Image (cartoon, rainbow, N blue to C red; front, side, top):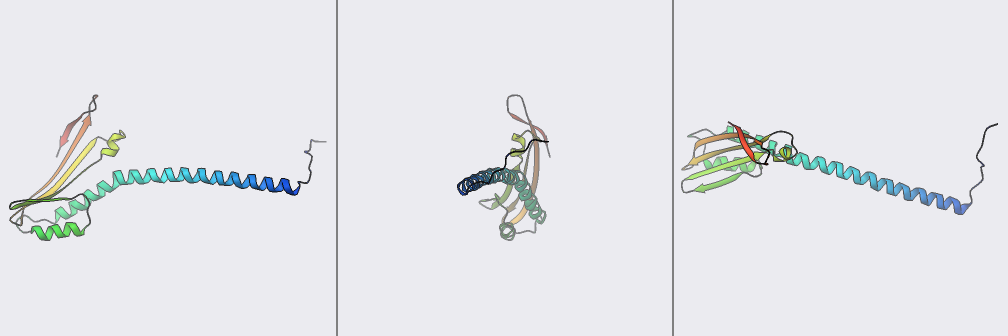
Length: 156
């Protein structure tokens, strides 16, 4: 004959206490799960914005740069195309008869995490008297020394 726990019927007040305790534990468990999920998805969003959106922004700007033809493309037309593409952080500036636009992006967030080396990309176009005269795309990769300073390893 095995051991059996004594079974007794719970009173109505004991049932209410048990249900209240159960619902409180469920609320606490839900809040913990919700907080962990919020932190997890917040972290993913932060890394997405910091890493992927910069790359995508540069890629879209490079597509716009590819449409520039030296001696043919007009400043006002190209500027309105770039503005219409909703590319963030594009710099537009004019000094006398020379206007230019450019975009710089890097992977500084990933570099701070120690993943890849710091890579910086800069692309732009220059216009003189409203006509395209120059297109440039620069890439520079650097490594950090023991003192925390970045030194260029390669530039393209």
